[in-house]
Image (cartoon, rainbow over all chains, first blue to last red; front, side, top):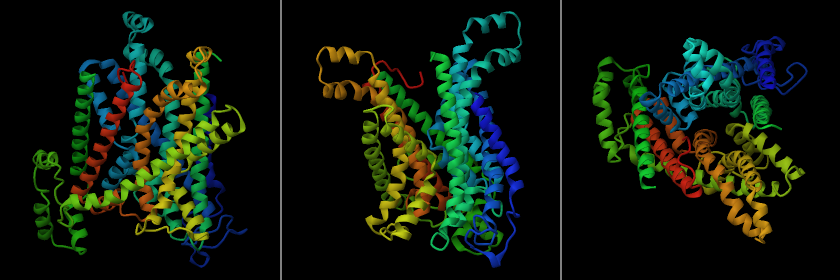
Length: 264
Length: 312
């Protein structure tokens, strides 16, 4: 648990204060200096419009990591609500919600996100919408599974008989059991959201120029692969390092939880 | 078994219908005037309102939602995908042409993915915790964090730009397919290696293996008859996810390498608001996905008779 909290703090910090260390304005066009190689003036070089790549990477963290964080939290809330609705509603509610979940799962998430983001006009809001709408299903399944197992537990039934309100039961009996597993799912979905945002940016359906986002930076860099190949290294590296860090934290968390449950 | 199969089939049909309805509703309610987008894509010029209205009637955009949905669904059940609203040509020939580029690529990627991950996972588990094991886990972990579009660009940089061994853009010769297939295949291999490795390790830890050994069963026979089927169950579970990864990767890889496959077909159709084309790709993808998952569910029951259903 601690590792994931630490990770979230570090990521938010990087996205929050990273831009403060940017030497230049990430959107400042400087045509005479276009496509210049790394130098003391521009540590990672400049892009086709002469913009400083280091500044764009640092500002890009706010877009790539920040949006992924928002998207994964929105789908966490949607998914948990749907999963608990299915578990507690039971019967027809359960059947309908779970078949809806199946329908959403019956389609590669990223392809669905491309279709949705593309048809809702591109840009940041349709990006958030597209990724949140296609990212809640795993939370729903996990929340439903845990909800079903809790529903018939003695202490939950006793709490109900004792007149505890539904909200209080959710807060004191459901949330503590849901949190660890949902956090594991969340780390995976956070990483997926980073990949999704940069993939959509790379296809041109994501964050729109001139905003610096790692995927759309790759799209810009791709044209200049022969003249300035280094330009496409940096944004990709930023994506890989972020995703790797989150995945490793998720793995560590999952192992720690398994140990807690099964004993060392 | 028959009842279970009928249940799975019914579920697949419900899911397919749901996907078709959701897609249609999404397209129908997407912002902007599709008639205008179609007119732009077709004539590439600014047009007067009455021309756009003519396009609207021709593309059937003046109907109500349910009429339009049923008009689309009916022919679809006879595998008639209708006509492109941009070119006016039937969807199917163009779609099958695109599939002709995509399926061989997907197959090659799958072969590369399994061909790399299976031996690697096997070698890694010969000495769990050994250097080979740790190295393969490290490489696989790194591999799952590398997005397909970046790996593709790196491979272009190395093999097409620097070494000039392979062509990068287009799909004219089979050689043009090598870099895309390797890009996708390595991504598949990265996630499969981890799953197969832990599958083998879990199967080896089963308590009946020492008993078999004590009864004098040879280690080759144990591996083939007891470890392999147990290791196959978790692998089967992720094959469905792997297919999703493959389809997602295809869209990106086709965009990087400029291949005229299903992914490029979809991206072009979205840009031009060619609804019949978008619908066709979405329905086809869902059909492939649901069919493969149905096969996996059935294979599951055969491999492990105790399982009633994956999410039971």
